[in-house]
Length: 126
Image (cartoon, rainbow, N blue to C red):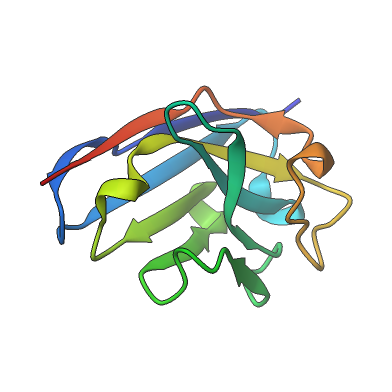
């Protein structure tokens, strides 16, 4: 089992930045693909970003490309999501997820991910 705990959410003004962290326990993250998803109020949970087990391969949703960066520090068993130029529509609960089977080419479908954190709220204000 992998336990995931997100942190770093909060309230930020539009145009600002936040860095989310996802810390793992139970198993090392170095053999898992890692991803971030989000659920905005009244919407379905959607893919944000994913990274392969060494972080070489990354994918981003079109809506965050060029603004968000996923990275990982396997020595610290932690994955990050750097969010810049935040927009009102980035307001959501952000979840991290881990998947062993797609560790070389990370999945973008949430159904592929085995382990999930509880989420951290990000609110962008005008």
